[in-house]
Figure 1 (cartoon, rainbow, N blue to C red):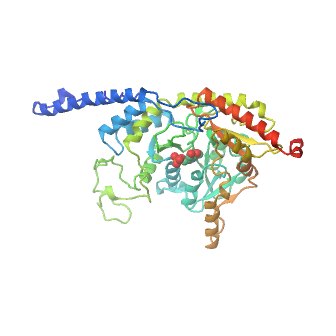
Figure 2 (figure 1 turned 90 degrees about the vertical axis):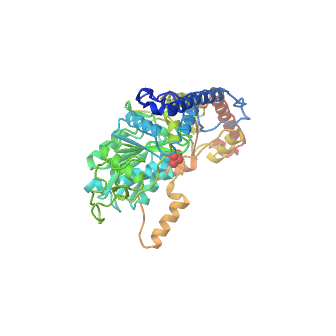
Figure 3 (figure 1 turned 180 degrees about the vertical axis):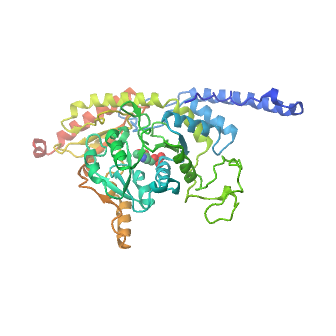
Length: 486
Ligand SMILES: Cc1ncc(COP(=O)(O)O)c(C=O)c1O
C-alpha cells in the first residue's frame, strides 16, 4: 500500500497558488494548520499514557479478542474529525486503494460491516450487467452450515438456494471430498468462509469453480492475512469480503470491505452499496460521465437525470471517513498483528498438546499458513466430560470462550422459521443438504474456541493454558468412575 501521510502534514495551504487578496484566508488557514498540529500532538501524548490495569491471572478476564491500537489510530481519527468530512473522503480513498493493492484486486470498496460486504457480494452476482452469468432466483450456491449466519443469509435474501456440505474436523472447513457431488444443474456459485482464519482448500475449490464455471466468493472476514501456498486468501475469489468489527484482524469499529477481482464487479458492487444508482460520481460531484442528462435507461424518459437513475435494487451501506481513518492506521499494522496471532496459536498448540487425550486440537489445512482468528478445540467423544462442562470451568477461571458461531445454522431458530414459513406457503424446502451434516453437528455439540488476538500477552496466554489444565484435571477428578474408565 502507499504509505499514509502522517496526520497534520497533509493539508498546509499552498501559499504560492493563492491570489494576494486571499492573504486573510491564508493567515486563518496557517493558524488552523498550526492548531491541528498542536491538537494531534496532544492526542498522541494522551494515547501514549498507559492506564490499562495490570493483568492478574485468575482474576482479570482473558478475552477472546479486542481492539489493539495506539496513537496512530487516535491521531488519524481526530485528524478526520477536524476535516469534518463525515461521509467518505480522503481516508476512505486511501484505505480502498490500500486494500485493492493488498489483495491484488482491481477494486475494493468500504461498507458498513462484514455482513454488508457479504450482502453486497451476493447481490452483485445478480446484476444484469453480468449477462448470462448473472445469478437468478433458484440458482444454487454451495456453502457450509458451520459458521457465521451472514455468510449464508444473503443467499436466501436474494432468492438463491444454499446447498450445504459437511465440514472436516480439525480444519473446520468444507469437506472438499463432498463438494464435487454437491454440484447440480443449477449450481452457479460457491460462497465459503475461511473458518477462524484457516483457509479452505483453494486448490480444490478453484479447480471446481473453473471446471463448472462457478463464481467464487471468499468470506475472508476472519482470515485477513492468511496465505494459501504463499498467496493471500481474499485474492482468489471473484469477490471476497472483510470485516473490520473489533475482534477481527484489523478494525474500524463497525466496518467491512468488498474486494473485487475485476473492475466490472467493482462498479456493480458500488452501485449496490450506493442505493443501486447507475451514476458513479463521487459524493458532491456531478456529471463525471459528461452526459448526466443524455442517458436513456429502463423505461425512463430520455435524458432523465443520471444521478437519480437506478440500475439495481440497492442499499446504502457506506462508511464515514472517521472509520476509514482508523482503518488506514490498522492496515499498516495488520501483518504485524498476523505474526502475533500465529505466534499465540503456535504456543497454545504446543502448551495444550498434553491434553490431546481429551481434546482434538486444530490443524491448518495442508498448503495453508493461517493468520488465525481463534484457537478451536473439540472435546473428544471418549472424554468423561462434555463441552458445556469445560466451557463452564474455563469461564469460571475467567477465560472467555466462544462457539463456532451458529454451530449448525440449519438448527438456528431463524432458519427453522424460514423453512417453516416457506413450506406453509407451498414453496418447498429453501435449501439442499448433500449427505449428512455429521461433523457440523459434532462441532455444534463439542466445539469451543479461545482467542489468539495480538493483545493476548504472554501472561494471559499462560493463564489460559493453566486454566485448561486445571479445568480438565478438575473435570476428570469429579467425573463418575464408569465414565472415567470408558
Ligand atoms: C466468517 C464471518 N463472516 C461475516 C461476519 C460478519 O461480520 P460483521 O460482524 O462485521 O458483520 C463474521 C463476524 O464475525 C464472520 O465471522
